[in-house]
Structures are given as structure tokens and as C-alpha cells.
Length: 212
Ligand SMILES: Cc1cc2nc3c(=O)[nH]c(=O)nc-3n(C[C@H](O)[C@H](O)[C@H](O)COP(=O)(O)OP(=O)(O)OC[C@H]3O[C@@H](n4cnc5c(N)ncnc54)[C@H](O)[C@@H]3O)c2cc1C
Image (cartoon, rainbow, N blue to C red):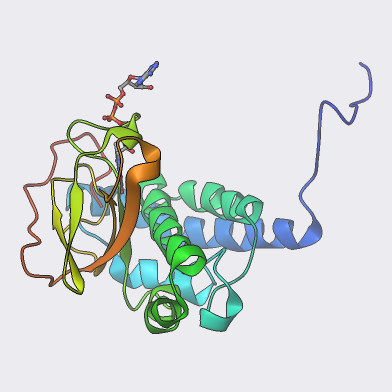
């Protein structure tokens, strides 16, 4: 057999990534896998275990360090989520969504929002949802219909989101809504807290697995 070329194997994980992979795989094997079936069948969201991942730096994997993030790369995050998913793919996806929401606030939020919100997200004292999908727009996300209309110092949001992981239990909702023209350029992002007046949650979807 011919030796592997650089094209066959474009990169290798470095030493740090391998030790991170080992650490998360151990966590998945010991703290997640033995309980994952029960969590799913009991519809139990294991917040205690989810918060333990924050102690390992998974509350803001690619969020800046000044607000408690780990300042790692997207590739590092992929390695972490792949290892975590060996214990429970739903738990791994749930934490990846929290990370996605935290990163959006880190990158696009103003300094006041970053300093006020992100330390609570990177420590996972609070957990965030990412709210893009709607009943009529999934893959074609830019067709979303939720509107945000300015009213004095506030925006009033109107619309329905669907398939939102953590809806009803999470503390913060990063919501995509239309403030401008039709298409992707007319969409803005809002941070909505769980107890915001007018925010309500529907019944849980019937689905196979993915119940946490
Ligand atoms: C467990 C779970 C958790 C989720 N969590 C979240 C969440 O936290 N936040 C959130 O915003 N969303 C969430 N979603 C929603 C998810 O992102 C959407 O399901 C996804 O965007 C696909 O949208 P859809 O289900 O409406 O399918 P559709 O967009 O209707 O697509 C159906 C099928 O048609 C194909 N298709 C669509 N358009 C085209 C095209 N133009 N050409 C060819 N094929 C096409 C798709 O590939 C797919 O196979 C979650 C979904 C699941 C299942």
C-alpha cells in the first residue's frame, strides 16, 4: 500500500487538541454515557452535568478570555463536541448551541452587553438558546418572518420560532428577527430574557430521542 500523502490527510490534531480530546472523551464516558438513556426517557435536562462542562472551559469555547471564555478555535470546538457526543449527541448539540449564542454576543454585542451577560454564560450560571428556525423557514433561514419594530427606546418582536433547543428552560434567547428588507440583509439579532413580557413557549415537539 502507498504511503499517505498530505492530500489524504490534510492536517493532524496538535498535542493540546489531543489532550483536550482525551479529557472530554473521559468526561463523556464517565459522566454522560452511563446516564444518557435515562435522561432521554425521563425527559430530564441534566443541568448539573451541563454546568460541570463549564468548569472544563466548555461554557464559551470560542469566546474571549476577558469574559470567562476559553478563546479556542472552531476546530478545537469541533474536537470537543465530537468527543462529548460519544456520550450523548443531544447533550453535545445542546452545549454547542449555547456556545453559538454566547459567541454571537461576544462578536456582535456591545461592550456593556458583553460584560453584563457573557460571564454568566461562560460559567453556565445562565444558558442561552439560538432562535432562528420558524414554522415556515428552516434551511431557507433568510425567509424568516418574525419582525422587530422600534417603539421608542425598545423593539417589539412579533412571530413564532420552532425547534428551539432549550426553549422554556433556558434563561436567554438570541432571536433573529426582521428589521429591514426581505432576505438575509434585513435581519437583526436580539437578546431576549426569559421573563420578558409577551414571551411564551408552546408544547414540546414529539420526536424520537433528543429529549434533553
Ligand atoms: C433536535 C433539533 C434541534 C434544533 N435546535 C434548533 C435551535 O436550537 N435553534 C434553531 O433555530 N433551530 C433548531 N433546529 C431547527 C433546524 O435548524 C432545522 O430543522 C433546519 O434548519 C432544517 O429546517 P426544516 O426542519 O424546516 O427543514 P426544511 O428546510 O423544510 O428542509 C427539509 C429537507 O429539504 C432539503 N432542502 C431544503 N431546501 C432545499 C433546497 N433549496 N435544495 C435542496 N434541498 C433542500 C433539506 O436539506 C432537508 O433535507 C433544531 C432541529 C432539530 C431536529
